[in-house]
Amino acid sequence: MAPADILQAARYWGLKIATAESCTGGMVAVALTDVAGSSDVFERGFVTYSNAAKQAMLGVLAETLATHGAVSEPVAREMAEGALAHSEADIAVSITGIAGPGGSEFKPEGRVCFGLAQRGKITEVETVDFGAPGRSKVRQAACDHALALLSAAVTL
Image 1 (tube, one colour):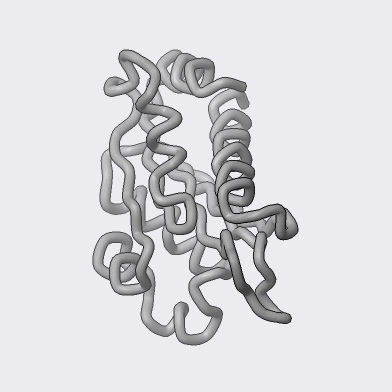
Image 2: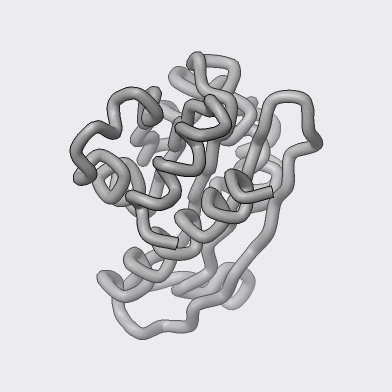
């Protein structure tokens, strides 16, 4: 579903959207706000590249970061839930990952964790390994995946 279609479906259901992005640096917010008239649906976007920003802007716990690392499903969950808590949105998607270059044996380049929080529902999290096709391709794949998560949420 294209960003315009996501916005139209959210508009139909009276839903507002927020994003909490790390490795994509705001790409999902850009994709949504590139659509004219998006301001009635897109509530706000958080670009929380550093751990300090994740804590200050979204309320991610220091303990969660210390225990699991920034690229983890628990952090993705807290980012998405924090975006809801710090906005007027009904749906929030979060992204935290390793776009590359680099990574480790345990967290390889191309690993991205996503969260989808919706008011009144249990937050969903998942990890996708996009491989190592290069930084820009990982970031675009992560953006596209986040848009797909939003699409599924607004079409239920």
